[in-house]
Length: 119
Image: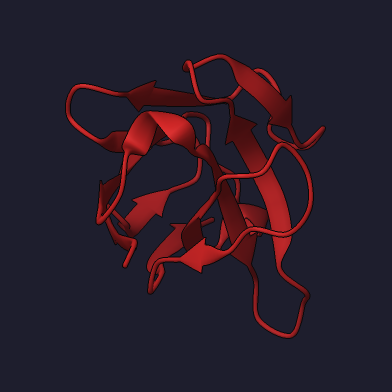
């Protein structure tokens, strides 16, 4: 059974940086497409960034382009999200997700990590 465990969230001032990590276990990591989602209070969950099996980023939300970087380490079974120049609207629970198929819904989710950006 695939398990995803996020870490790295916390409180940061606007303009600051955070690095989120997601540890993957339970299957062959390099066969999965990975992604980071976030959900702000009273809002729907939204896709922030995604990366393909080989480690090439395939999606960034327009609101984070140029500030966030997704990366994948197939040797360490981790996917990371480097977040720079954080804004208060980036306050949300960030979730790591995984799927094996090239399209469709993400099948596996982590428990989430809270990111709070103060103004």
